Length: 302
Image (cartoon, rainbow, N blue to C red):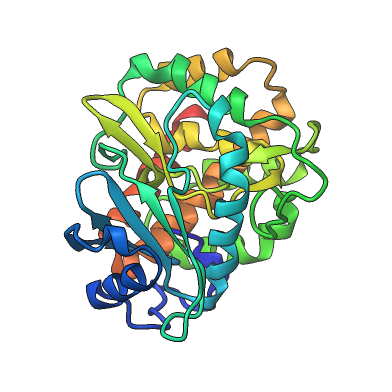
């Protein structure tokens, strides 16, 4: 997904630059020539970044829009500071790329993490304890100069107008915006933020979680890293796990989730579900399925 709210477009925004293997090779040749002997091929292009496989063990990640340039800088600066305490692998930058005459933004060479995205292979229920441990390890106080993200970790009231426009549009396209979903959303809007701000991943949907043989193998795309309301990340429980019992186990293992935080987490799950479904129906069927699953699971839990 990579933050559709950062664009006025309804579907996937176009790349502002032509980013291909030729560009990647020229950047490596100029800045990391020892890596130019490795094969390069495009893996994926999301809302904000293009990803290339570099040999067997590395990848190259480049912003495809100016608005994403700051996000990759945040990832480069802050992820290495918290990575060692996390119980699941994350792609801490291996090499840093600088802007050049042919490409105006910073970019990264990252380790290649094995696995497929969780929308293609759901984590096994036995991953509940590990995922709860990951969230607890991540959700620690951030320094005062941590990056600010205006669309993650904030009060849901700040998202209401934007999300409700999409909710109204989805009502004309699907039957997924049920009275129960609207009731859960309204409860979330009125729920007080009753926790201190912590580090957040900020975009923990199924496309940013890697799974191998049912085991969670990596958490990728840290561009939205920020300090804020941890309920934003707890929304991932409904985005990743199909079984209600597994979702309940994760929340129990996470420990001390208040009723207000639970309501906000469901509200954030609705935010992600609505964004994925609304944008996915335009031009990304995988996102649409992710959004549908999320909204159905939230509705099931009530």
